[in-house]
Image 1 (spheres, rainbow, N blue to C red):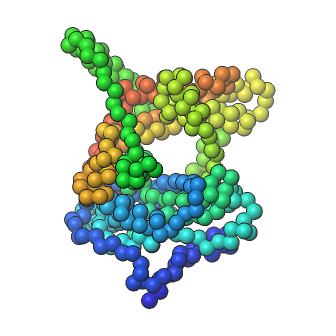
Image 2 (spheres, one colour; image 1 turned 180 degrees about the vertical axis):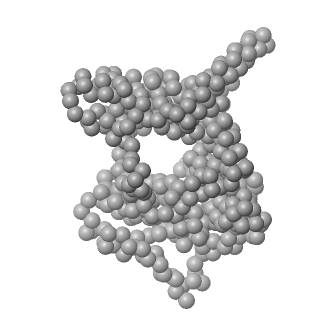
Image 3 (cartoon, helix red, strand yellow; image 1 turned 120 degrees about the horizontal axis):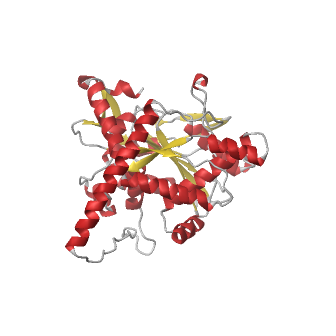
Length: 401
């Protein structure tokens, strides 16, 4: 019996490798009780909520190595060997159900004539955009790998990974990636993890004072930020601007554009200005949006500056609420099947974007750090998570629609 499946993309016929069924690597999953989705996973259970990641490699992709590697690592993480189904016995709520899994079903190798592709970088953008516009197939475990053995300006080959967001949040997936990695010098050793620095020992009175002052700051900041959140939800709307879509247009297709930045430059700014990488990236986002919006309005520079001053634009920033998960725990989960905290444990904060005309580009980064410092002190993200959990528990999953 032969197994074959194909998809089409802009005239290309993309085929999975045809092989005999008895040679397909199949992993038997033991039958375990069904498991309900966490509140945030429930919120993200739509087929349109997924993550697309592009990996570039210095060598050509080896399909067999991918199959073996995934079979020995990711498959032991329960979410990667389960599919989502609706449990009508529990008010129609989605649950995780373990299934028999063929790793090869999730590894897609396009059968392309690479010599006919004149612009590989543009092809990768179009291919990724096509993947991003296809809803996730909910009839099987919610992940897939696309291997492209084509040379681009930055890599010899690529792997495009599509993972449904209900499997895990960004922190979980990044930790899992590190747990799957090994040192080049020692293939059996996990990559080095950052170690916590020891805090200097101070008197008990000092720590009591610091703790009391911190509680006052947390309480005050939480009241202010949560009030802003409620005002945003109930009354305050963003100013109409070119970034906003028209609800009457319905669902719009996605266009993925790749831009590569130097992480060394990001780290240089981070170290020089004493902040986090995310602060730098948020500042870059604000600077880019400011320039984009400025280009969309007519008039002189002074007139554009006045328009930007009047804009109110906000975004939603996901905050990890889970304590740091040790890479060793995730490695044990995949090697020995041990238990480890996993999934979507994230809250959301409303982030006011600084879309102004600034002569100093570093001002956008300073603003981003100042805003995020207030958000981190407040409990806004925990309150948001609590509201989602309460809403789903008492009103059901239909509320998210």
